[in-house]
Image 1 (cartoon, rainbow, N blue to C red):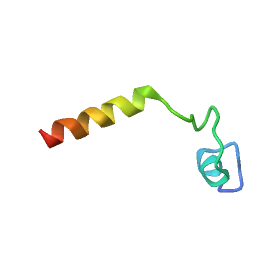
Image 2: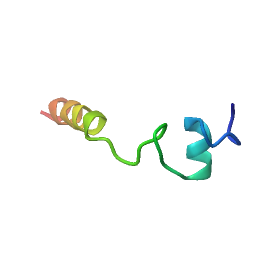
Image 3: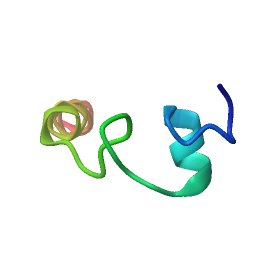
Amino acid sequence: MGRGDIKTKKGKIFAGSFGKTRPAKSNATAKPATAKKAAAKK
């Protein structure tokens, strides 16, 4: 359960791969973060 374990999120980040544990792009998490940044700028 570390950087060498590809089944974990940390392992996938270290290996540079994507999958169920580490999705390549997820609109659900990207949109609220963008909305917060836009609200902060205004």
